[in-house]
Amino acid sequence: MKWIDPHIHCSARTTDDYVKMAEQGIVAVIEPAFWLGQPRTNVGSFIDYYSSLIGWERFRASQYGIKHYCTIGLNSKEANNEALAEEVMEILPRFLPKEGVVAVGEIGYDDQTKLEDKYYRAQLELAKEYDMLVMVHTPHRDKKKGTIKSMEVALEHGLDPNKVIIDHNNEETIQDTLDRGFWAAFTIYPKTKMGNERMVEVVKKFGSDRIIVDSSADWGYSDPLAVPKTANLMLKMGIAEEDVVKTCYSNAILAYGQSGQFNESDWEQKTDADPKELFEGNSVLRGQENNQTKTS
Amino acid sequence: MDSYLSNLLKHLSESETVWFNKKMELIKAAENEKELFFSFSFVQRKIERKEVVVDQRKWFTDELVRLFFILAKEENDPETFYLKFEKLFITSDSKESIALLKSLPFYPYTKGLLNKASEGLRSNVSDIFKAVAIFNEFPQKYFNEMTWNQMILKSLFIDSPLYSIIGIDEKRNLDLNRMLCDYALERIAASRSINPELWRCVTDVSDNRIFSEWEKVFSNGNDFEKSAIGLISKRSKEQISPSYSMLSNISHEKLRYNTWDEIGEALELERKEL
Image (cartoon, rainbow over all chains, first blue to last red; front, top):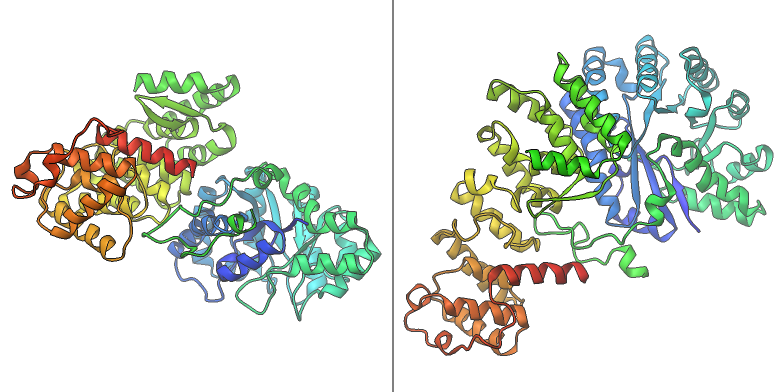
């Protein structure tokens, strides 16, 4: 079966992960711009990071037969460095209209400071100006209040909830998210946030409409196979295949497809990854067969 | 540029033409570069990618639209233009980088973009490399011998065709000759095949291992290899090696390809079909 992981930080993952993801049926991924663990100290670091999301990482994923998309935004943690945040806001319009950029994101709150609020709002305005979707990162701490605030502020700025994906939901926030008409994404982490079994229960209770499963796998302890594993567990636990497909594949297309940059035809018609696309005399495959050639 | 514009317009739909013309006007009239930056990237949402052949070169509609956007506002001094290019370049995605580099020969000021062109050659993405290397007058005009030679060598490493490089014969030089012979010897030592296009830029050979290689591929090689040896043998004896007789005994009638361009083109076609 085919799956989409609509939230994964591929830049922090190895090529082995790409191989396994492709083997497990992941055909497309969305990599939201986030923080790197190490705080950035100048705008050039942001420029290079965004460039790698639309360039190098997309190329790397393509070598494993996976279509790579991204979101571009100033993350909440680094919004707290005001001087730098101002400079980043200046360059965001240069990246938002690029090919394969499906949303402004991930933006929102971390500590829920005034500066986080300022740049969250400024980026909601940008999304409106560029007629783009928004991917919202909801805070880990003081989660329920922060999630509700994220949505209220988006509504206050006149965003259509159908064009906003609220990520990192849990059992305590989902009702509020669905009630307001937003998309509710769930991150499956091995230990924290949502676990696979909990996700099964969520779908049993809330159904599959507007619910999206992702891994948010990054440089920390996380699982790039969270989506296929959760999908398989759901199937095993008796959830209807239709609901599994919706939460782990087609809802992501419905939500992010609104950008015009995320179309099923992109990966349905894809040609085989070209193992001859080389760089510096070497392919990223370094003699390894790519997944496409291997399975075809 | 007129033939480029008329060719482009032939490939744009009505609504695309309206958008293109409107944006050209806006970019021209704009006080700052915001409109250009936005439109330059927005091309991918507005213009359907179609192939356009102008002067035997393959372009895409989106690339040509981007080129005209860059030229829309005339700059009176090189520095302003270079700065504009730099800003577009550092935030470009792959397709945009390709359009920017492919367009090098059409800019009002080009000399100051030497570093950008070299950066394109260093790219890991082969299509960005090719945007500079093939069907582009810039390298012949501005690259020094060192950069030129690296470009030729890298072309061979990544299977980018030599015949499409403008000036490939005119810019042959002794240092390149040496680099190519060394590379050929490395391949021979590793029992690997040699791209027959390599020999196009080799004019001076003294190593017997290369002669043996020629003999080997001339009797057992494929049509590309045999034809390449045939073409080497047409060069004056003094150029290659006065004392080496094998080449003068070659009959050319049975060879499939008669020019280096034919070999290069056929090789490229074969690679695409593989």
